[in-house]
Every structure is written in C-alpha cells, then in structure tokens.
Length: 188
Image (cartoon, rainbow, N blue to C red; front, side):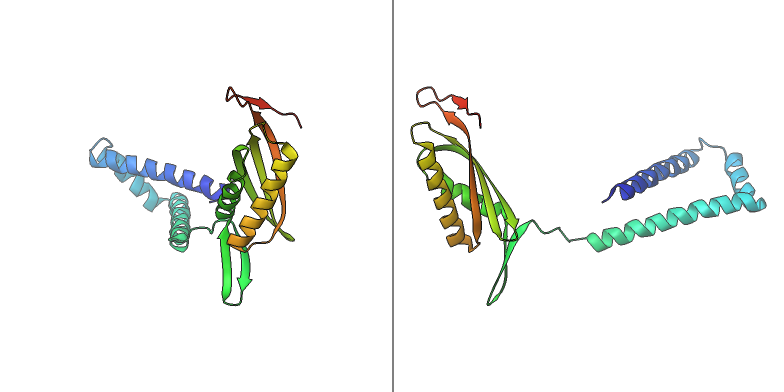
C-alpha cells in the first residue's frame, strides 16, 4: 500500500470513528432528538447544505468502493519472493534467493577454519554473485581458506541449484582467538 492510500485510509478511519461516535451517542440519547432533527431539516431545507452532505457522502462512497476493489483484487495474492530464474527443456525454474544463500552458507561452513559466516546472493545479468562475510579461526592461512570457500561455494551452488555463479566474494571480517574464543576485528 502506497503512502497516498495510507493517508486516505487514515482519514477514512477517522471519519468512521466520528460517525460511529455520533450514532452511538444518538442511540444512547446523549445527543438530543431536537439537534438531530435540526441537522436533518437543515439538509432538506438548504440546497447548499444538502450539496455539502451529498459531496461528503459521495467521497466516502468512492473511497469505500476503492478500498473494496483493492482488497478483493489483492486477496490471496502474495508477492513472489525474490528468485533466480532459469529455463529448462521442461519449463521455468525459480529458486529463491533465500535458498541460494542457504546453499552457499552450507558449502562455506564445510571449509575448515570458518567460525561464523553470513551469505548474500545477488542475481545479475551475467550470472549470480555470492558475497560471504566470514569469521576465521586464525590458525589457517587466510588466502588458502578464502580460495577453498570460493571454490566450494561455487561448485556446491552450481551443482545443487544449477545456477551459474559469476563470482564469489569473501570478506574476512574477524579472526577468532584460538585460546580465548574472543574475536579480534581486522581492518581492511
């Protein structure tokens, strides 16, 4: 729902609150019969007043119809999650970004020396890129570790999902201390 629709819905809800309060107060005799009749007589006797009431009722009616059609048109239709799409001889295949991120994380966790990681997948025109942020143990040489992560992630995702991986970027964000379990931030 866009900002304009939210604004209109807020005004519509406020108008309904006022009308509801008026009807409840009238039904409990908190607003006198004479006052309600004076409003109705004013509406019938003055063409200007009746035109104002008509315009307000018409706007209220149009907003109600708009929200009714919007709710019926959008009912049961969820937006599709972001996905990578490929075509096979049998039809279309869509694999969600979340699934690809899970596959990439699974492959990266298999590499010895990885303590913690976060994977992000971005579909691009020339393939899909995978960005992995890792915490390493500090005992394995980082260039060797990064290369293993890149190869493992690329091979695993391409094999399991059938999606072409154009690049695997690895950011080593922390080195965990072997003895204490604390982390030391690396500057890059």
